[in-house]
Length: 218
Length: 255
Ligand SMILES: Nc1ncnc2c1ncn2[C@@H]1O[C@H](COP(=O)(O)OP(=O)(O)OP(=O)(O)O)[C@@H](O)[C@H]1O
Ligand SMILES: [Mg+2]
Image 1 (spheres, each protein chain N blue to C red):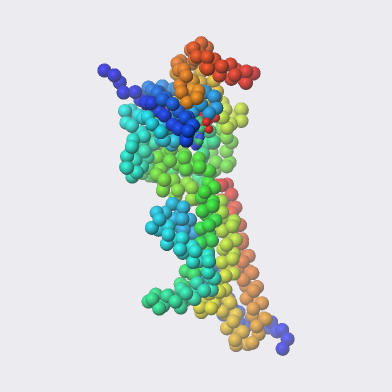
Image 2: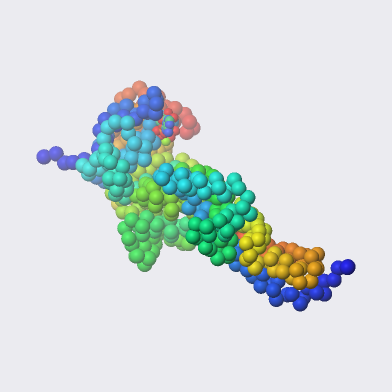
């Protein structure tokens, strides 16, 4: 059985739909990981211990264990305690929190690196410490780590393939379904790889635009 | 009948560990008065200035603004509310400007008034335009700080402080970080404020500026006020040996 790519176009519909789900999954998880990363960073640095301890537990859990296991736990495990999440939601939570922890590490370092004159200037104007953090320190810290967070988001896109194991019909699962029907593994995995690559290019273009837009405000 | 002094510092004392940076400093400033603080590096000028708005809290002593104690001992929450309120009346300008780089010039100026005085968008914009026109920076209102020269940044920083309509302005070497050719534009703005009778306490290394703008000069050394008086006296006929030494060194350096 040689390679025959002529079969691929007849599955263009399901594959593109899978790609769309991958994009959706990635974008929603990325937003969660970004906002969650900011929240976790602020909590880790300034939260009262009653919030800081659970936050540190989440960080430890999501950093110290495999993402695959986390997805299984969220999707299959939580059902047992009565939390029955749709697969897509479970995937978003898993991916989002996993990368929120990584983003939080970046943002924490960046917050500590913001010149202390910034906090002083804000406090001198009469802003409270929380106001100064929200309005002055955190926005600068986040801008400073846009490039590495962007790298995390590219990694998130690739890891979104793992969510196929809990049955989200994203690109990898769409390819697997096509292979199940045709036994053309190489052709469909290659087709999926191309689509991942295209999504990747799109994400990089978006990230470059964001970097350009914040260039002056750093 | 004695009038309450505008700013009063009583028995200010500050230590970092065993290092005594301020030892029993007493100072009063009247409304509309312009006071220069001069002295060698490490003499405690910045520490004293930053104690006035409690940015560097004193170890002992009191700071009063119009009779109200700034550095009150209060429970944490009450202190927060109190100090944030007091600081709205005390503008401060830093050596390194400390503009917010992620905000435009306009946003730098409007942030605090919007947040703390609940100004609406239109009102805040009007305020920003007025304050920026005052320091000659209106044309750059929608620039980011990264697009400005040092002198322009400092003028925006002054406008940002003035937008809170402070009663008192503190300057900590506002021109020390500037290239020589940019010093004058900032000095001009400060002179204008002086003409408008803003009460100012100015830490400076620029003796000519202090002599021409200030009503009174305070010479500090080793954490104490060594000598104070009108610039004509302190600069021309200082009574203290330490003041004479400092001024001689300054003149030699300027040559
Ligand atoms: N956070 C700190 N911890 C320890 N020592 C400090 C701290 N801040 C200031 N000092 C010390 O306090 C002394 C007075 O410092 P201050 O900044 O008030 O001097 P200054 O008169 O403003 O000097 P300069 O002209 O160099 O700005 C210096 O010896 C300085 O090293
Ligand atoms: Mg100083």
